[in-house]
Amino acid sequence: MTFEGTPPPPVIAIEGGNTQQVLYLDKGGGLQYAAVFLADARAGGAAPAAPAVLNQRSYIFVPQVLVVRAGQVMRFTSDDPAHHNVRSVDPNPANAFSVDTDGGVLNAPSHRFAATPPDRPVVLSCDIHPWMVAWVYAFEHNLSAVTDAAGRFRIENVPPGRHRLAVRQPAGGLARDLVVDVAAGQTTRRDVRFTANDVRVPVR
Image (cartoon, helix red, strand yellow):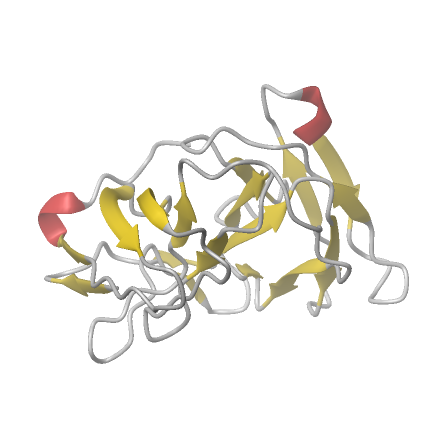
């Protein structure tokens, strides 16, 4: 997955001197932190036993985007010396909460997300540092992934047939739906390219 053109400017962290990028790109334009999932996937499959982890490091959330299984444990950790919290304001009460992250790794708070609509991830923020933001997609299936630093992704165990592959990068408002045909025992490859004209930075 790649991005061509000039990306939106980053948000400067007032503390720590780090930046919260809108789009994280490698030298070749590989787009990180894009959620990729089968929009027509049925519920099923075992939930991952290991918890997902969202960290607060250098006054930004790492990673910026996560996909999890509904009901999977997510732990909230912090590497920063400063006081942080994690807040969600969501229409679903099961996904609305606020937790303090000063307890360190051993006492990290956690939450189990209810399933989210495909185009409405849960937005997470920090009350103390308003530039901090992350997005969580929670699905009733495991047919999802997040692109890595080179823009690559892999979704395992896709049933054979025709599927709608959805790509969402919420920080830049990037969205694309593709029709993919998957044959039994074969790997299907898709290249997705975005440009600066596709950017729709959401208001939050």
